[in-house]
Image (tube, rainbow, N blue to C red):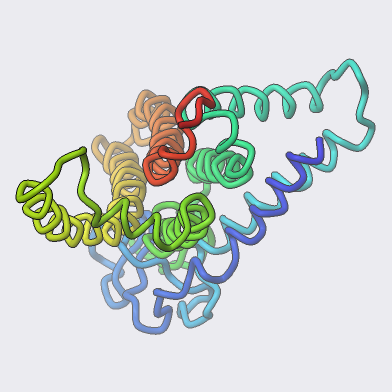
Length: 311
């Protein structure tokens, strides 16, 4: 169970203040999941805002509502790992059984995709990403997330304008931070697998066995194509972060709209959509993990084929 300890300790790093670097708490408009603009106590709720608000009645604290959620999720997972491994038994049961099942299932799943050798080197990252994203997505569905905090009194009651908590992956800063961590790891793994020369040849080098004039032509063509490949590689963190953020952000806004669609039945209409969001939480965690794993396999595939067969 040392592996799961390493994974969950990394969660603390993933939930670091890096997730809030892009936020400007003092500049954002005070709005929450059911919030109002600063001067609009009489207006209707406008839904979840793109920027996570800072804590406090004025939203000026550098700690944002989404950062608190990521810290809470990371702490909860670390405590669960400690609890599950407090008395490790040869025949696991209870929490230890669940933890080992989760880790072993992820390991076997990734091994079938990226190969036995590569998964030994990278499993700690991919498993962490999946577990952390999954439980962060689900934590954002708990009643009270986005609806408990500081607010203003209106004729319809108190409207929360500064929520205490907000879905962690509904903040672009958080998803972009995870994508950039992967990008840094991808560069390290690529150079470890092939070296500087091997990475350069993989991106810019000609493919196929040719000779003569045709080979010279292919060298020129693939060198130009390499620049497009570099652009594609640099764009990956953006696509990864926006894909996860967009799905979670849209889901939370949809739940709020369902809650306000029919007055008096706001507690009932979102229930079917909550089950859909539970599924979306799993799918998005899986997609993020699979894309990062495939990107890594593609740069290392000359050294490691899926299933562990080397060239």
